[in-house]
Image (cartoon, rainbow, N blue to C red; front, side, top):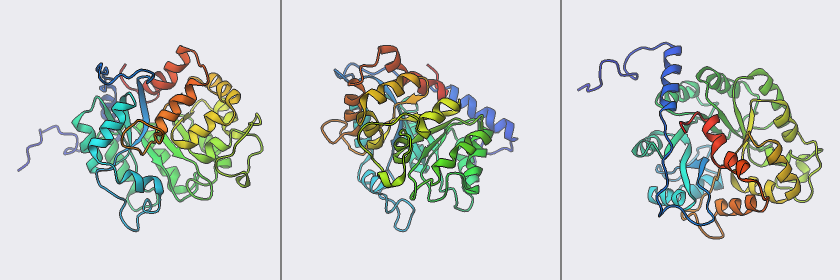
Length: 324
């Protein structure tokens, strides 16, 4: 029995313009909740986490592209209650869940003031474009995390960037040369081709390229002083549509390997840096929590309150079009 209203968006034919308008309206409706006194902990800034993963489908399916990813395997051991506990303990007032599937979408809809989703399908799978478009029509507010075994400028990737352009949503990229989204030194061509798409950079190759002259032989998590003039820093300056998040251990490494450079980088790009965790622990506390380590690393930079507010909340509000 069809119980959908006559004008249900998923049941009637709409033009692309109608779909885009509907998605934009859904995005604008999100309001950010206030934390209760019990959720606010000393030394934990209220923040919007733009990089978090849900796992209610369990471990990645054998043979899937995520089956050999240690991060996804660890996430697969975390249940819904632990997901909620982690984000509350880290002070998240709203979290973006990446790579939405049916169960993730259902989870987010239980508390839409605390959870929103991005859409992601393996870009070279049959029907990937249509599947991502469907998620966006259902209310996803971005695309990603694109963590793909194809080059970052391949035709399969370009079709996703076309979708992002058509729906006016950001794209979050995992750059890890020789593994995922390979070809980072060529990514400036993508930025030029899609000037209206907001790209959010993340992961090992993204942060390693803070340093001028970086090559893969330097390792995925290089240590020590950073030579000014790397591709990441240059492109953040040159391209208004390029942003970054601080997620994962790769973000922590970027904040701690050369603190003078890190502080200068964040101050110079203070309107384009967003907080993300990518943490796989279930508690949100203790020495294994990537988010806690990130708070410590940011605190050590002695950023002023205005810059901190941008990093933790305000930039995400603007880039993701969240209602303040």
